[in-house]
Image (cartoon, rainbow, N blue to C red):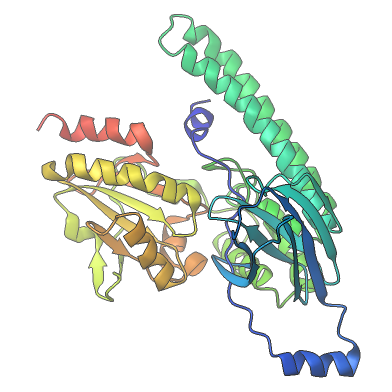
Length: 411
């Protein structure tokens, strides 16, 4: 129950993927159209955004592994109507957005003509959407997901209201069982959806979702066979899709770590009381920084990325903790799993993180730290004492503050 209660403070995000720029040649498109009619790969996304602000841009982006790249943008007309037309060779994810926090994830197949109607302040919950079976499945899943979140939130409210009560010990067993039943029921529905759509890119979406932040629906360390099955089907169907190639690379790593078909034991990860392995990676300037250079400090080793919303949500708390405790020997060593240096450094600047140490080999899932630490998700963190020994894992928010008070408050 504590895992669920702690994680409920986060927000579920769809967008663990990003997009790169698509360049078109009008002459090439014209030549293809003359040669073969070349309309089978075209797709159209059009509709009405009610209440869209005057002059407000609507941005269409394609989803790539670890980054986003714009495809097109426009300003809806006075009635909120819009229309995008582009081309895709295989089913692909696109993000339709107005601002950084108002977006809808679409799964678009070649030839689809998608019609949608949505309110300008809630693109993620369209009033109506037609013409995309994949997107309809995702929206149905998100509705089930939100219902599970709401049920868990009600249990969290009961827990919080009773935390200082003498009756809390009597409630905990009941709350634990009810929370477990909600999570198991939701995972069961997600598993059914995954198995019914194993040949659809919907399965890639499902493999990247969390019940709540920090609690994946499908844990590759515990259920690698699900990832193996999806990879086997999709890599045969769409071997050139960037997202499928990314999954295939990840699954190859899983197979290498567990040749018998089972995941590597979590017991191989650094345990509390043991030293953390050395990390030696380039900083934004290209110089190699070593974690061991901070020996003698209490250090938070934080694995994050610019594209990870829960990571970015926690950054203001890290700034607060750093300001409060750095005078007593607290430091932060952030390890990024980004692919693009400009996105990494811009996030450092925007989130005001530049006062502590940053490193990355800019290899995303292929980063050496993913393999050496067995990372299956971020954010993830280790708090080290002055001798470099692990004293806590994955502390966030108030929990991190309480532990720092325990370690440094008496000095």
